[in-house]
Image (cartoon, rainbow, N blue to C red; front, side, top):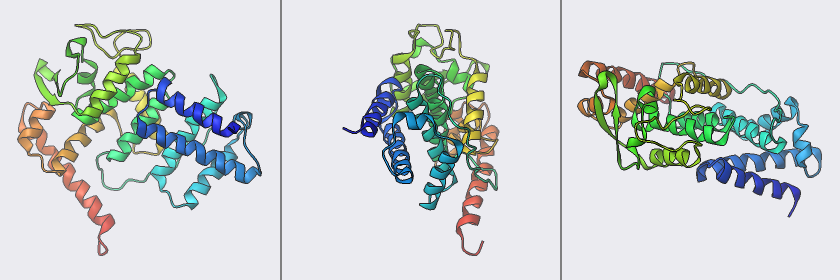
Length: 298
């Protein structure tokens, strides 16, 4: 086995076991690592060692991204590729490794629109991958999946206690004015929460929040907002891409797929239907955005 192949195998194991990433994420990140090694080998005329990776500069990474852009990938894909490269180089360099600072491409926005499903996954992956510890990455991934997958407010997600364990097909949450509601729990969201609990240093206890800060206290929502802010900058996403925007996207995507307003009202925990009706306007803006970009006469 070559040194490069051994490094790739070690990285795959690290992502799957230490970072507890999904099969999809492991496949995507390993593919990026293999493309980077192949690119460097072609341009340097020989195999690349782990030490070579620790000496890469900004120009090397920019050249790799330019090569990928030449293959036809767009801004969002390039930003995700850059995020994956950073993760691989941090792994190759070991603890405290310094990674060259390369600014990602900016994704231009026209009409205000919800965060797309691809952008949600890119955002969550970046937040999880850049976390300082594996369990913190799993925690942040689970929180963001709850916001987008269940339409929760960040306060509702962070308010989930050990009483909700073990998780089932639904989740009871407490919203504004202590109003409780039941929301469906997608398998992917349930798996994200369970994966976090499996690596969290503190066990889930009845009456206590399951999402903990680095020292074991209740997780401060400002930490999630800060992590999302950093990720959207690296991925070139709009400043409107916030944790709360994932809840809006949940609502808009359901409405666009035929959900009625009354059902949406219950899922979101709105006290009045007028609060939910705003999503009809957001959905119209999204459709107009698609029309203007797709119709040949627009």
